[in-house]
Length: 110
Length: 112
Image 1: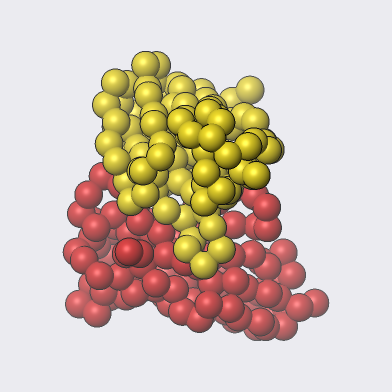
Image 2: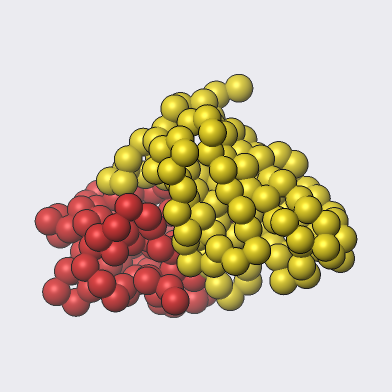
């Protein structure tokens, strides 16, 4: 079964708006990662947040982690049409492998 | 070419045939992974390898075989392909468990 579950499954917004995606997971983790996948392409790593971190920023991306609630959120500020993609969270479950969620499909309209 | 590559990019085969998907990385990363991606299931781990000659099962290993005789290569073999193995297969590598994974471009496999 999936370790991480993203919410919502799909999100449509206008350019310039912020997009927020959530991820919930089931077991303790060492770190949580977010990836992006453009249609028909491989996944690209966005950001990694360790279990002892609460918030991390990278450009227009902001990731938060709440280990007590076993949840994380990815915020993309000032979205662009080029941000249209699927976004996946992945957790290690304290092991040496990642388990991916089913993803959030983000559509940003010009 | 630097990076991680997969071949072939597209493959059509018949039920019962043996198929091997290749994955090659140039970074000498210790870890390599095989995933399959299907609608509604996201990415599911098939097999992974922590180093040459060390492999372990993931979530959906049945019907697949892997080997890793060299650090840079991690082939995935479908011994007797079934229609349920129609999928997009991604290979990935990472230097360690606390680092990001680097993904290949994927192989789209159709089993008829």
